[in-house]
Image (tube, rainbow, N blue to C red; front, side, top):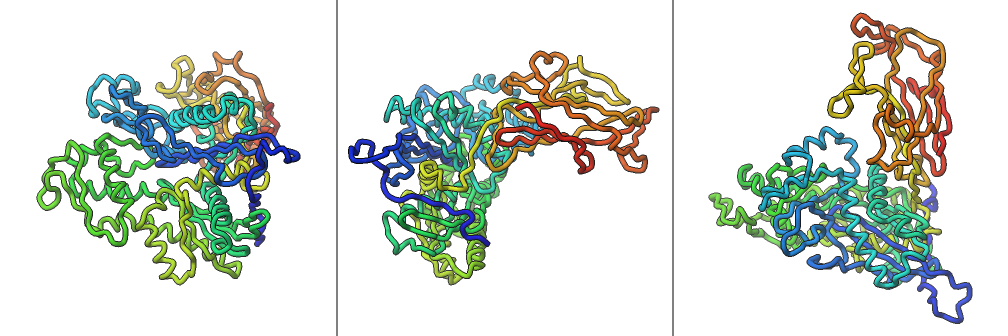
Length: 640
């Protein structure tokens, strides 16, 4: 196993001052933006280095998010489509009107939205709304008249939220220098969880672009880069201990493990320190690992307990749709639930090994609720054993993640000397106690440490990654697909999705003829180290066996996604033929003893088989292929 395969080199020392007259070969100032969009909180930082190095003290973290925002180093990852009150709340972050229904935990939806499917999403929306027009619900005065769901997709909700983030970043940067954004070479570094699928990365990338993190707003934008959250945090942490604490905390040839415990995910990464000076060099051990066991899952178990305590009837006044497990899948919070969770979050953060039972007052409309031996005039008591139960599953999963990394390091014949903990959940005293206790109990002989600025270690590390991108191998460069690509196929007819004009019957089946099936979208993510692959199966039906060649065309459009046509018959002047695939029917075998190949529809015998079209988008090229039973029938380049 090569210890140096995933090495990270990070130059040391301060950046070169622009106004030093003795400096030779002074480099131009750059703008580096770090974005840590989290499940519960989001952080943004930036720096303006004039070289390939920077000191940690030169990184600025945005703390001004406007009026009524509590203004901390992170802002809640929350947005509401409810109207503001006469107080003119911003309706995102911490500035929400009293009656606002807030969209929460939307980040977790990005990885599952296509799995849910359109039907599931539609049912969720209809469950909380009288119709699909959100604006019609603004007629009511109270929170009961507001819908718990937005009709928008997760990607659109994230884009709307990041638009707010961008607007405040824009003001911050221009307050610093009014021309910096337009005339300065810029890199944007976005942090992502370790277990983040292409689907989730694509939605994140598209939402960022729509929100303003694009070349229109940054004309000198060079790269949008992805780095995993624990890798960014580890880079910041190693730099912090080397620069401020010295070799007593971080030594060459030693191993360390970093745990980034956030709201939705917990990620763990491990490194060996190859060198401290003159350049900090780290060798990554294996790959980062992660699980969905962040602090929101403690909240979920608390909600389950509250529902058991109150019963469904009373609990519905906090959560009308009983959405306890909807941490993803269009999660929302009513004003009552938001007030309750704010109180619980304070108790959760302060809960430690010395804590006993804790008390909590229920919010309106349950402030006077009485349930004998359970609730006294809205006051509930949470036993210590219940609080421990809320934490236990998450902590056990975190310990298992750390154990795997210890075992991995032991395969090198060594052991880690430090365990670093960062992230919002990492501020929990109860989690800290259990990790320290586990180190002693398991005789791991590791030092447990939390670096300064641990809550913003990820976003600060993202900026360091951007400054030092030339020496960081695991940064993933991104690009955007230039066009949208479709094929024209018949689909099973649906009155909801198709025009009656396209309805036809073929071999006894009701079909919508000549529908445009969009496989790649303009603006889709391209990764420098991984092609984007989109597939679509379709049935080929023949009235008789043939040995000739048929053609399947791939069409290209430059229209924006919402303006693209869906019917081929009225869109020919909007499309270009980007590729023509030739399918040799003599290579197909329609054997009557194979299920689904020889079919009888009515009185007609139909020869049918399933083919698959595959589009593979590389950094600067696109290829199309047709497959049958795991055999490639044809492949061709597509005009890109």
